[in-house]
Length: 306
Picture 1 (cartoon, helix red, strand yellow):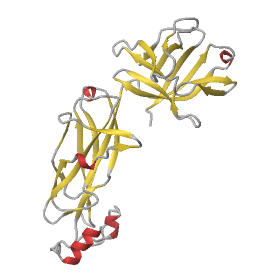
Picture 2 (picture 1 turned 60 degrees about the vertical axis):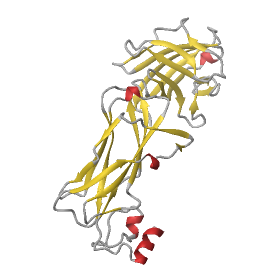
Picture 3 (picture 1 turned 90 degrees about the vertical axis):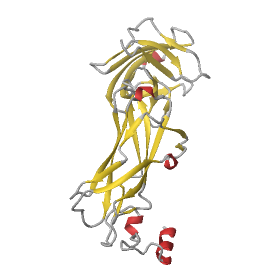
Picture 4 (picture 1 turned 30 degrees about the vertical axis):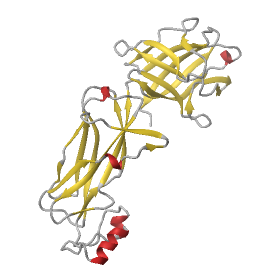
């Protein structure tokens, strides 16, 4: 904003279009009252896009680019966009961001806001998300580098970035019902517990408890009627499936500092699997190779996790 005002003061940008000095424009409120200025810019500065780990092309983002003026144009307004990784932060909430590899996405550098419209779509497509590492968070940024004569690119709306999380088909929010067979906890089944299953690999998911007081990776245990506790994040089961048969092939502890976790096949167990029709996960596991330290779980899908 200081540079913009300075440019106006020095007369370095006193062209026929004037300076973008409207306060609402600088505050990203799109309704410029200066009819002599016609601005263009992204309507958002960032976006989070979850993608499935599929080989088919997927829309990464379909973001609007808008005209920041009182009037629409009678003709198409052209603008050009280029990749700019410098606008992507190195990390968000202590999660490191990796640049989306070149060749893994496509976009159109040359775009238009259609005649008579305030907005146009800028679309980015990831061509094959199955080649991306589900253990990483990716990012890619863009910048509007030019537009038709008579339009000015907003100084604070000319860039946009998107972060990408890869989700496999088992990822989502579930309702968990189950039992730990160790007395006295075997008297207190845990029922209808909200669980998020986080993608931890191409065909694996990890338990996360988005419940107040927990909010961490780990697994609950019934401690009294209607009451749950847990061992902490050091008991953090991670389920691996055969992506073709959907059978559970392994259950391990995602925390190497915790006790070893393995598949349980004793009393009350069954066939560990994902049922795509019912959208249920059935999983049976134990820790310390002890059949008296086993969990028998059924998780029912309720929707995508946040």
